[in-house]
Length: 457
Image (tube, rainbow, N blue to C red; front, side):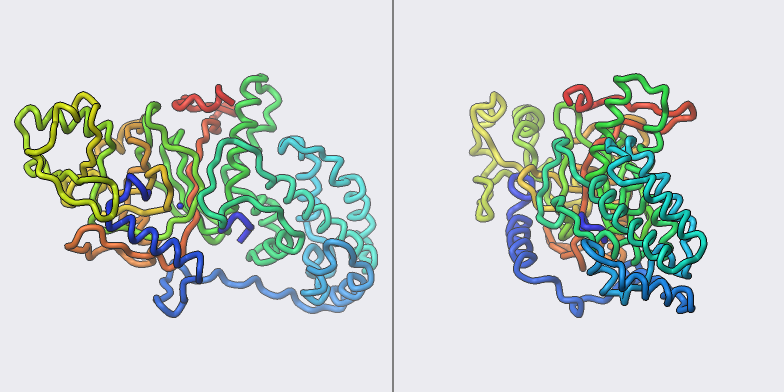
């Protein structure tokens, strides 16, 4: 909903996967997916629209005053809804007004200046509205909405923390006043949306609370601020999306205003880090190949072949190049000594099957770094407290569970043919990020900075 709503290919995808990725990416840019082409699964039902406020004499009187007083950046929003109030839906201001002012009074936690949002003027307007005069209520309503527009836009304004944006849908953009206010009223509970900072990610809200600790050292506060800046790039929970936290090696997914799932993942080693990326998961590949990174071909496969193993026996095959038209090579005709000493680069892929490193499915957000989410057969790694073992991709504890959420149906029938592409009913944003700050019983704690990103900042 809120504006960042809205993701590999290249060397990491096989020939069939590359062709499929190119075709789907081109189609996605030209036209939206037709809703009639697929059934609407239960998990994808639109959230119920908020109940319209009851029309009372008091509310109608406030609406009349809003028509007279509304102007500037919020006028269009109120005009579109017949000047019906949102802060005074029953004709009087609700507790969310005071909760919001308390929030902006602590805007320094967001790295902002509280005075920029006029908290004293807001308090005065709220007090004057307590008497029930429609003109005073309308004035307070408009002042609150203007402050909300400014505050949300400022809190959401991105900082440069090294995130790479793969798709236009997930690139941060300037928020329009109408967008901010419409997002607020489309939720089921306006009061909860304000109190919980529903326009921000749950990670941001949690870290913001930690920032109130007055006993933080200067170094810890700087690290926490960096974590907050990473979190402010994420959408709020009303946007259907996935977050992968490479620091804790966990994945979370959200929709309808709440977290609906989480799982352990295996992410990149310090030498082969999972990058910070934001993109759109557009399709799944069933029965995938695994294109082996060239350094592993040199260090792992070539020595085994030189030791007497065969490619076919290990369920690998060598290809002439990285194109979609690559041809298979005779393993006996390859100069494996040259491959082993690094003077010859060779493309090798692992065949689909029970032992494939990709498992039975991978979820693709097209990028040129060869990063994606995928199944794994090495489930024992999920039980380790430190799960930084991959070459950069994200191995999933529960790929079928994520697949059911993404596709709207269980992944039960796997194709017999390799590399079967299955488009998602709707592309889903995914954010690969890095959070080292975490709440503890004593306040703020920090995970091990495995990738050294906090110290480089």
